[in-house]
Length: 346
Image (tube, rainbow, N blue to C red):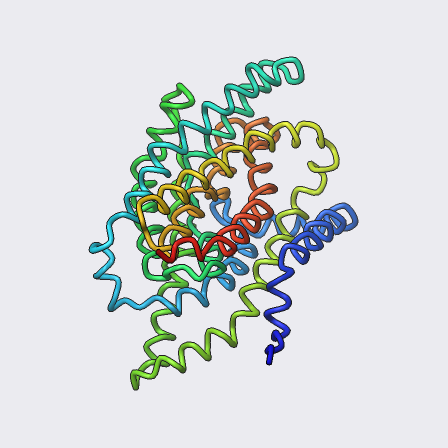
């Protein structure tokens, strides 16, 4: 007898539809009540919006409860996943993003945009390419039922490398040396999106698991999982509400920027996912590694673009387009990963 799906299961199945509706709602509300979104956007510190931070925290907290610190020490016994993450994020992604930006805006789209604007769009794309994801990847990893402990280690190592490698890589690829890294933005984001939810998850797990009964943890995470999805949808509404005017005012420019970003996203995912498959890395490690490489730390990229080129610059616009395309792209990749999971059972 076929069991009926729970309301949450049905909701998750059509998550792309709900995200699409939230995108439309965000744009509509952003145009209807722009002053409300301006007020929310102003509630920030070090260019990190605190309202968005709360919703992201709600998204990733359930996964942090699943992190088992006792087993993290064994991650080093499975180095292949870390190798994929580090090579893709730091030796492939920044340079392919720069190459695609130059290809499209200095050659393919040369007759559609001015040379000065083209250089700024390329700069914005480079900033996205040098900033691997810190927060949202926990959500994508949870959606593919990835290894929570391994994902945490992958993200943590990326964060450490980013502190030292971000400025030199941006300077190299942009050909400038006066890069101003907003350290407050970088460090505050790591604190809000990794350390605080991780600490909260650890405390929660310790309280639930005092008797060694893992079923209590499973029941608790199942109960709070709907809040994770609600946090994702609320974040989508806010992000698209913030950029509603830009979406309506510059649709063609946004489409031009989105094309190389889409090619980059799907290309990076294919490299990491295919590498993991050929290297016989388990799906629960390969899928999050590929998703980490595909997604971007857009808060940092936007902050640096604004500080280097100005709020109304082409570079800032390119990083904003990165925000706009990321959620739909990542949902499509999560769906693809879940459909191809069985091919890793070898």
